[in-house]
Length: 426
Image (cartoon, rainbow, N blue to C red):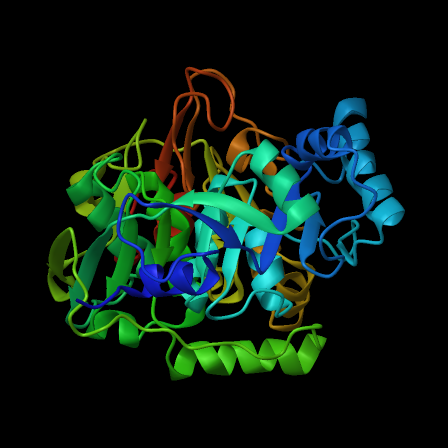
């Protein structure tokens, strides 16, 4: 009996075992761990409680203050300062200050710090994003991160695997975001509970990395432990370019793929040629329906960005829709690139100018309003369309505000129309 890609990566990192099966508990060596300005301060406190004088590896820890920088208040400034002081005290290389900082789940793969075949943990639920590289990546608690920073190990339960098979060629305006929202609507928010979502099929073979990151990012919205896509030529091209540009300390990696006789807990097949863009209604990511089913849903704010859809191709797609058009007078448009490199590209390629000319605002890299942080908080009764990953009650502001999730093209069209709209309507 063979192993899935997730099982093979876990087995290669597990300590003291020669075979594994779903539901087994293992102690595993990690390749990389990460924390942000919300979660890492707790980890730092717990780390100090261990009495350790050094971290397990100064080059394999990242601290990214991406949620509240530029600091929105004294508390958020202190959170970021805690990370900065800890990084300096323990010689951690990968601390990213404002000006070079970006949203952690876009920044770290961009820098070549996470590689295929890695075992990665992060004190953030959307750490599963990095599975797009063919790595096992999952979110953990802050105390788990503290232990990992100290000893380079983590205690894990081996997940079973649900295989998602996407077939066919998507229509215009249908993106990876729509494919994963469709699957979450099918599975439900807990349909993948404690499972791996292995994303496959000829439709995936033709997706670029930005869309693959978006899909793995939202595996957690089906309750999954991780999302993962087997590496291919597109993956390797992305990784090699990151290594060439940023020269990270680790340059070798391992391509891992599922065995032909791997065992799956479930297999779901989707014909993407029949899909139109999907919009998830409040207050769950599983409330996905075709965009054509939304009639006259007025929109006060549109947010384009986040660790899900703040990458270059996302901004390009939104700019294509907005070119030569104006944002509806009753709607705000907030655009947030995920990293400084993406910011620079958006400026050089003219996307930023398009957003501004349309009447939107173009912000510095940050998680911003995605988690109800800053730079676009909703008031009572307001409605937003966002390319973010969650639309829970109060996620972006007031408990009586409403967030609809969409791809960047639908978000941009909605900003122009002032209501949820298909890009073809423009």
